[in-house]
Amino acid sequence: MITPTRSASLERALDRLRMGFKDETPGALFRASADFYSEIFDGAGHHIAWEIVQRLNGRISRLRMMTLSESNRTQPGIAHMENICLAITSGDASAARRAVMDHLQDTAAIADRLLAAAEGGDDE
Image (cartoon, rainbow, N blue to C red; front, side):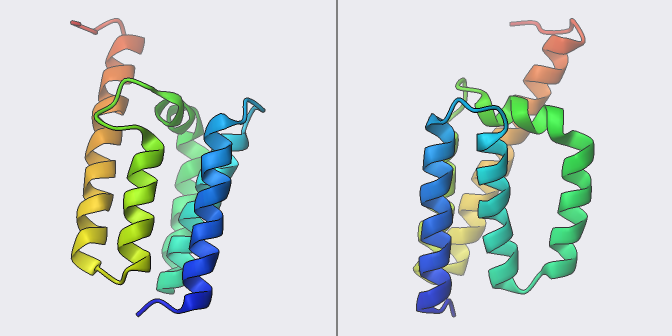
């Protein structure tokens, strides 16, 4: 069960993420998305998992920046985050899982497309 304090903290992180999507300062969106994910992992008590994600982010930061800024997606990136946040703050674990899976599938499709284009194998 999510506490009101944790819910408010996640909502604030989502607000910073919304601003990150509008901010053209290099790295603003990347930092805001990391803060949002950090709130989720911290709230779930998955501190070790978050450390692993941070290490991976260092290795995939270029691809992550490309997928974050991509506009050709099934729904805007911020919409994914809003769905995730709403599901978590409402305490609906099934909806949270679906929202995360939708986000991951969309992001994976974008990454596949961007990597194929970078390798010259884009058939579109």
